Image (cartoon, rainbow, N blue to C red; front, side, top):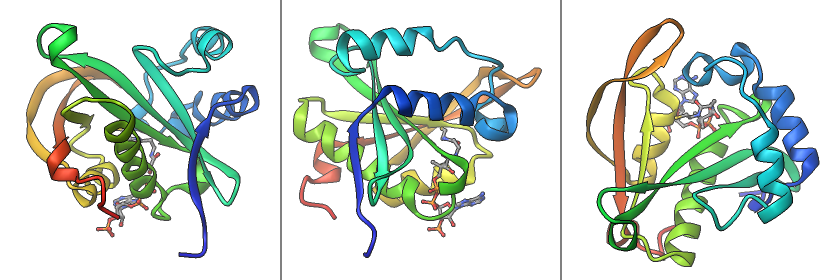
Length: 177
Ligand SMILES: CC(C)(COP(=O)(O)OP(=O)(O)OC[C@H]1O[C@@H](n2cnc3c(N)ncnc32)[C@H](O)[C@@H]1OP(=O)(O)O)[C@@H](O)C(=O)NCCC(=O)NCCS
């Protein structure tokens, strides 16, 4: 493949680009628009810990060195933190980069990163049943649908179901391409 996709730590300039791209319904897409979101917490987390090594974490996605979007991983617990922690991943591409295969590759790289650098057994993801692009990305990486979380998300004036997907360490296989 001619273009090189990479994940790298977030910069202030990246956060500026995300703010201008995602602080509108058209930029965020209806599936990800929850109204205006304060951005101070992200700036603070960048300043104090580089948006890494916390309960909510972020890396920027680049293609041939150009900023294409971001991936996140958030702490989720199905029991006690010490023994039952997993990551939930999320992704947001800048509008010009959508529909070009970047979302699948970026999330695959994030899953590889998390299984390589942390000891979790499962990585999960949730998405809207109408977000076909994200569902296809997850399926192509090898995520399996676990179920429907009913009326879990308030957005756009009504409740929305969410699909819960996961991939386990041995299903991914760190050698997978
Ligand atoms: C969702 C998102 C990450 C998908 O990444 P992407 O790079 O656009 O998707 P890809 O190009 O890798 O395509 C993945 C699959 O979805 C399909 N697809 C892409 N855009 C689509 C669209 N608008 N409608 C339907 N299917 C679409 C592709 O055809 C491909 O399927 P295929 O391999 O069967 O042909 C990206 O569009 C995005 O950031 N959207 C806004 C934020 C968002 O929705 N994040 C996810 C929140 S849970």
